[in-house]
Structures are given as C-alpha cells and as structure tokens.
View (tube, rainbow, N blue to C red):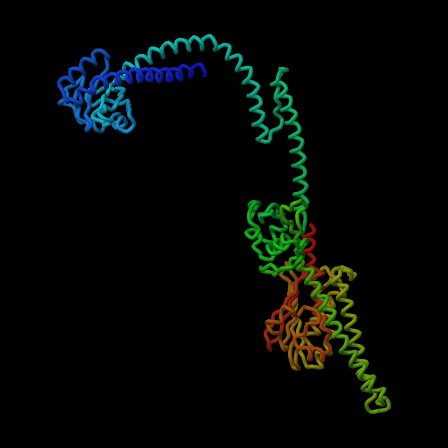
Amino acid sequence: MIAATFPIALARWERANVIDQVRGQLVIAAEMIRSRVEPILAAQDLEQLQSVTDQIARITEVRLTIVAEDGEVLAESEAVVSAMQNHSNRPELIAAGNLGRGEAIRRSPTLGIDLFYLALPIYQDKTTIGFVRVASKLQSIDRKAHDRQQTLWLVAGGIVFLAAPIVYFTVGSLVRPLSQLTASSRAISAGNYQHPVTLDSHDELGELAGAFNQMRNELARRVAELEDHNRRMSVVLGGMVEGVLAVDADRRVLVVNQAARQLFNCPTEDVTGRPLLEVARNVDVDSAVTQVFNGQNPCQTEFSLPGPMRRTISLFATRLSADPSPGVVIVLHDVTELRRLENLRRDFVTNVSHELKTPLAAIKAYAETLRMGAINDSENNLGFVDGISKQAELLHRLIGDVIHLARVESGKETFEITTVDMRETIKQCLSQYKTLAEEKNIALIFEGVGDNMQVKADRDGMFAIFSNLLSNAIKYTPEDGQVNVRLRSDGQMVLLEVQDTGIGIDQEHQERVFERFFRVDQARSRDLGGTGLGLAIVKHLVLAFSGKIGVKSDLGMGSTFHVEFPPVKSLEQLSD
C-alpha cells in the first residue's frame, strides 16, 4: 500500500516542481521582455511593438501578449490582435495590477488550450501603462511530469515486486496475533470470556498475549462476582416488603425495587436515570430528598398515597454512604394497616371505657341511693337492688363479649370443627327466642329449601351467629312485626337470611354495623340491652368458618342480614 501510494505522491510533487521551474523561466522571460518593450509602449509605436513581440516569442518559445492598462490587447504572438477581446477581466492581469505579479492556470478563449499565464506590469514614471504577459502550454508541463511519473512507476513496481513476499510474511506475522487479540476483545465485549489468545512466540507479542489472557481471566472472575452480587442484591431488594429507591445528586433514579414500583405504580420498563418526580410523582418524597441534601440526615416522615384505597406510607431517607454523598436512599413502608389497627385499638379502648362507665355509673348511683337511706325504704329498695342486678348483668355480658371478640380476632378461640346441620341449629335457636317474640307479638317464620344444609363449623359458634342475628331482629322490630328466617342451598353455598320489619338502617351506616360498639341509635340500643359487640362477633365467627356476611336495609322498612357458607360437599371437593 505504501509502495503504491508513494509514486503517486512523488509524481504530484514532481509536477509541482516542474511548474515551479516553468514559473521561474517565465518570470525571467517576462522581466527581460518588459525592459525591452517598455520604451516602445511609452512611444506608442504599435507596429514596432508587434514586431518585437513576434521576435521575442520565436526566441523564447513562449506565447507573448502586450496589453494596455485598460485591457486592450496591443500585441500578440499567436493571434490576430484585432480579433481578441478586451483582457481587463483576466485574473493574472488583475493580480499583476494589484500585487506586482499575477499568474493563472486556465483555458485560453483565443487558442482553446490550457496555458500557464504569468503577467508583470509595465511602468512609466511609477505609473502602470500596460502589462506584459507570457504563457506556456500546460500540455508541455504535463508531458514533462508524465515522463518522470513513468520512471517513478517503474521504480515503484520493481520495489513492490521485490518487497511483496517480505511484506506478506512480515505483516502476516504481525497481523495474525493482532487478529486473535481483536477477535478475543470482541468476544469479551459480547460477554464471552472463553476465547483465549494462543501464541507460541516469545517476543513482545507473546508477552502481550499472555498479559491479555491474564486480564481476560481476571475480568471474567470480577464480572462473575459482580453478577453474583447483583443477583443477590436483586433477590434481597425484590423480596423486601419495604420499597427501596435510590437517587443520585441530580435526583435521578439509581435503584428501585419491586415494592417501590407497586407503591408508585411505576411503568414496567426500566426507569433508571429518570427524574425522581417523574417516577414517584409525589412531592412528599421529593421534599424528603431536599431535606436530606440540605443537611437533615436522616429524614423520617409519613405521607398518604391517593388511590382506590388511601394508603399511609412511612418514609426514611438518608444519604448514601460515600463522601461526598452522591445521592439519597429512601426506604418506604406501607403502614396503612398498622395505623388502622392503632386507630382501632384507640377507638376500642375509648369505646370500652365509655361502655363500662355507663353500667358502673348506674350501679354507683343505685348504691349511693341505698346508702343514703333508701335501703330502709321498703317500697323502693328492692327496685334499686334490681337495677343494680340488671346493670351488673349488662356489665358481665359486655365483658364476656369483649373477651370473646378478642379471642376470635386473635385466633386464640378454640373451635371444635365438625359437621353442623344448619336446619337443626336454626330450629333450636328459634325455639329459644320463641317466648321473647311472643311477648312483642312478633311472628317468627322459618323457610327451609334444599337438601344439603350441612357445613363445617363449630356448633356453639354457629349457634352464637344465629342467636345474635335473631336477637337483633327481634329487639329492633316493633310489636306486631314479623321476622323471616330463610335457609336454602343452591349446591354451591348454603344461604341464610334473617329479615325483619324493624326500624331499618340508613345507607350511610350499613358498612359500619359490623364495627365494634357501633350503634345507629345509641340511646335506644342501650335501652334494649345491647352491648354493641354482637354483630362484630358474628362477622368474625362467619369469617372463621369460611363464610360471608352482608346486610341490605331501607330506613323504616326493616333489614335483611344474609350469610353464606360452603356446604360439606363443596369442602370435600376442594380438598380432593
């Protein structure tokens, strides 16, 4: 390649050298001609000017042109002067007038051939009165250069012919190892570290190959360690229930685990490198990062995430362990359930305290009255004692219900799961409440449709469910009302409905009737002897027996509580 390009470059240099030689010859000729024609041009002897021009042109073998200062051709060695155009626009003449000498390589409009022009100004008393222009055919210049190029090509061909075998073997000995190094490098860049370089030479290339193989092995080991570390980190971060999110100093995401993605509804594609606000879309998170950057390290706060179910998130943000700190790591924990339980516990303590104070206040009032002398009042003292007894019984039932509910909720209640015939259990419950219904002239109607009414449950727990639902229906149904108990089976579920014609429940309260101590009408519920825990106990018992419970009601039109349990047959099929 070098042998081939060298003659070309040398030939170009030779052509430029030939042009320089021609330029020097033309300058000498122009200087000589200018001194000869200057007095003739000053005398305006055009005939003599043409004669001298022809004579000098024959001697120097160059084209000679004498041009007036305004561009008019005064004498010409190879053309008729009268047929020639004005030369004021010729580049060599313009350059000569401005710089003292001008030259150009171009095609002659007069002769139709390429010429090398050189022009000098002719002065008289330091004033330009014309120009002398000499020209050499470019063809002769190219011919000289071509002759030298042929010689150079012959020399170069001989050199290439003699050097080719040597170059082939020399370059091959260098290229083959480099090719192996290149192939191995490409394999490493593609993740393939099982591509060693095999060279038997003990020269510098052999040492390079050995160093390269050592580097390849070390790189493979370190990449394997990094991949293993990344896998373990991914497993740990992916298995965390807490959301983890790390950002750099520009608040662009470095790491985000699956839990954080779920919290912020992140897109499935990789969000690494995106701005924090674009990923989290939460100003509280961004504000926490700002506080850490401003020196509050660590920063701990809570905020709410909107959505179908509003969630409470605990945030802990701290600087990444580096100096200077490149960013912030954020740990997010969903504490919605924890806060709900805390509120539930707080409400429970408040409600229990309130519910316990009511009968205790009544007992204290009765006791104070008796102590102040009413004990000797034979007409009223037994009434006060009876009041104390009723309030004590209410207090006893309240405490019993609280303990029962707590054990059911905690899962510590011991159930004896067996096959329970719901039809028989409901009949027993109806017989127990028959007298209470008759006292209020309430009609108890039972309807049972279907064959398989057996479910897997605790017999006493199931009786407690029916008892609470039936007791509430009778309590909140006025005299001369009606309570319908319907039991049916559709093969998939055993369905129980307890419908009354009582006061009903407003729509806004229906979702809360299963909460502890919730009463639609506080005063009336206490008058009827309710603890406010019955439906809460029912709900947890139903859930413990794999059932479902709900309510439908219209204010003033009565309520319908419906319970569903899977029958024994369905449970056996599920176990199969």
